[in-house]
Length: 94
Image 1 (tube, rainbow, N blue to C red):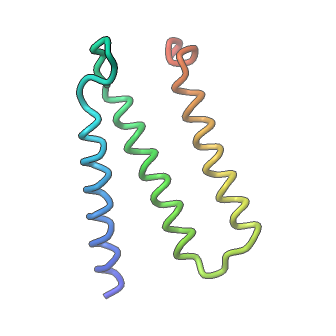
Image 2 (cartoon, rainbow, N blue to C red; image 1 turned 120 degrees about the vertical axis):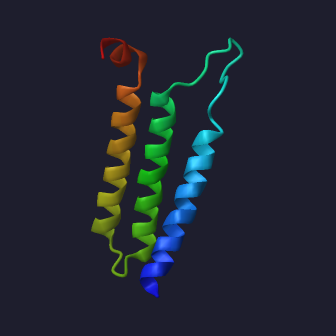
């Protein structure tokens, strides 16, 4: 029963993330610039990373200070790397 609960929740969460990212397609600014695949996939992957991390925090039985520090460092490093790789200076090089 627990397995099927997780399967159903994963399908629901996946559908929410998919439709949220699907709604991002189309013009994004006043100049008519449309979003490309990189932008939408970055948003989808960021949603998955955050969702999984928060579900791990909620399901962990033995929460302690070290665990929360490691989770915070993990999320912070993901967002720092994601932001820096998506900056204009690095994006033009790649």
